[in-house]
Length: 271
Ligand SMILES: NC(=O)c1ccc[n+]([C@@H]2O[C@H](COP(=O)([O-])OP(=O)(O)OC[C@H]3O[C@@H](n4cnc5c(N)ncnc54)[C@H](O)[C@@H]3O)[C@@H](O)[C@H]2O)c1
Image 1 (spheres, helix red, strand yellow):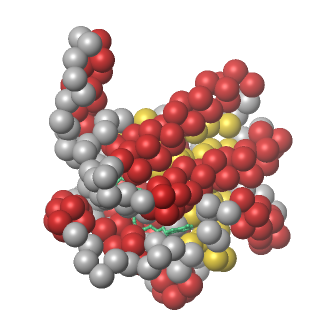
Image 2 (tube, rainbow, N blue to C red):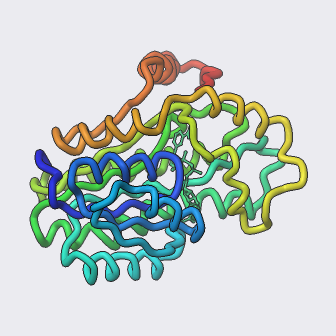
């Protein structure tokens, strides 16, 4: 989609971090925005912080709930009559050893990170294929390309997002060449993801634990979300599938692939 000006973008998880940065980048391109999130105050602040003149509407939407994503589609159509770009971006972090993750943790992380993308694709894809053009950006992570320890539920959710996106790419190429998909695979980005437990069904734990502290340190040294948003906008314009934001990612992916080909043990790869 070479020219984004005047096109309509839907972004989930748009009140913070990468989603919010995409909103600003797309606004700068002249896009009309449909923003959604589960946090109403942050959502209102995000909308208020956009440049004057941005055509923007917003609504609360929990992406893990299919009926709420359907309501988001209807809201987008009522607001702007069409949708061109769908960014299935909402996600939560969920660090912890396999021995410690409980079923609520698993269901929450898979529900938001993987079902959120499944719901977004299921609900919006028919619109895009019917109009014969459009683009879907699914936010995965490097955690969808190799599996670091202590991030089991997160890794599983992001491998799922990568697999879904790869599958969709070739189905679209065969049957709907005007509709495109990209998968965003960042390593650490400076966002609020280390505080994801603010939205955990059981509320944030009293003590987040050592793993959460380590993750927070990495996040604080991450790249700027605006850099990620720039790469997303470029990928949409040139129909690039893989959006690999960090220079050290290819080497880690190579190491994982090499271990498979060599029948070796999974390498201990950190983000
Ligand atoms: N920050 C990183 O280092 C990093 C790296 C790789 C991938 N990612 C991915 O980027 C995406 C955005 O995360 P971020 O880093 O900007 O974090 P963030 O916490 O700053 O933003 C995520 C947003 O998603 C919202 N959200 C949470 N649960 C939701 C739900 N059920 N439905 C709708 N919205 C929900 C939050 O309220 C928040 O506004 C996620 O998918 C995340 O996994 C982040």
